[in-house]
Image 1 (cartoon, rainbow over the protein chains, first blue to last red):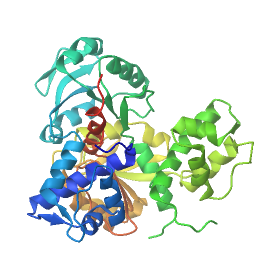
Image 2: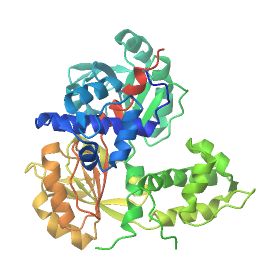
Image 3: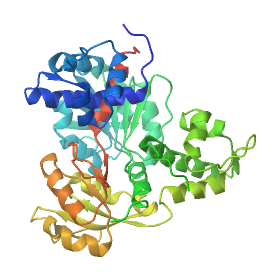
Image 4: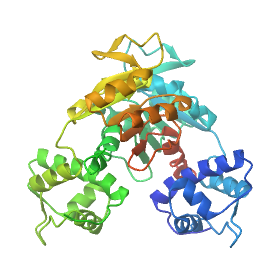
Amino acid sequence: MVQRVVPDVVVRRLTQYYYALRHCQERGVEVVSSQRLGEMLNVTAAQIRKDLSFFGGFGKQGIGYHVGSLLEHVQRILGLQQEWPVALVGLGNLGRALLQYPGFAQEGFQIVALFDTDPRKVGTTAGQLVIRDNNEIAQVLPAAGVRIAILALPPDEAQEVADRLIQAGVRALLNYAPITLKVPAGVWVRQMDPLLALQSMTYYLVRVTG
Amino acid sequence: MVQRVVPDVVVRRLTQYYYALRHCQERGVEVVSSQRLGEMLNVTAAQIRKDLSFFGGFGKQGIGYHVGSLLEHVQRILGLQQEWPVALVGLGNLGRALLQYPGFAQEGFQIVALFDTDPRKVGTTAGQLVIRDNNEIAQVLPAAGVRIAILALPPDEAQEVADRLIQAGVRALLNYAPITLKVPAGVWVRQMDPLLALQSMTYYLVRVTG
């Protein structure tokens, strides 16, 4: 058991290694070098070796990584060998688009509970699930063992809902509302903010022509 | 003019500095220390000083940064002092949710062109714009000066549409399709992938209890 704290940026890259290794496996590749992995992910071979060293030594000098075995390790490190029940809060256009996205279930993230505050929506079904009122979060989630929630909400509702979800045992929030959520230690948030993404690309656009 | 290449991670953090500085300005704060900025953004004061040093010296030793002046600089560095016309491809639930999101226009990103391939959608209007066929991308975008596009598409259509957009002059792609787009040098992509985000949080969930 390696005891060093793994930087979050390494954890994020690990998900990319996971997909690159799956890509190799699907193509029947049995061994991959850090050079080749690096090319696939646009990072240096040295970075790959350093990242993976946080979790122990996997590769063999001059040979490379055994794809199947490294994939299994990365999957276990990331906690992806199990199913994760997920709550979705907010059933507007965005929430409904997310509900239809087959990738979640394919990758082991099963949406098991839906919440909204709109009385016209509460009690109706979406994707074979009944939409419940946000007031029911505390009753529903602990029993379902839900620790991951997706927030597809307007910004003025997101913090209150996040607080409620955390009280009900949620520890990971995928936040589509364009606000920075305040959460206690031990709760993780990923911000899906299209504006920040756009604003970090215009930097390049003003520097190139053509 | 500082000539060093700025790492992409610094560019991304710059967008966060931008919002933190706006937050300060809205609250009437005139001077902010790198310590305080760091607390707001969860990075060290040293990191902030180092990041900003890429663009010249802004702060005064022992005094801090003048909020208004630094904000203006960061805005100009990021190319946010101008309006950016944007194309949106894919008018499913996700595309429609994005079209309704007021943040884009508020921040200077004006959606000016809509595309879809579905004959039931082409020719109809959404958000006061006529949805055009993907075939028209090459005719419409250069005339409108569009260099930014949002892809709200299924994964099997995304690469072909991206190629077409790039040929029509697009240089920045906000990609909601869960595939890694292949783009030439000088084109930037930001991936809005909820699965990668979820999979980078389960790492933490399997390591904590409660």
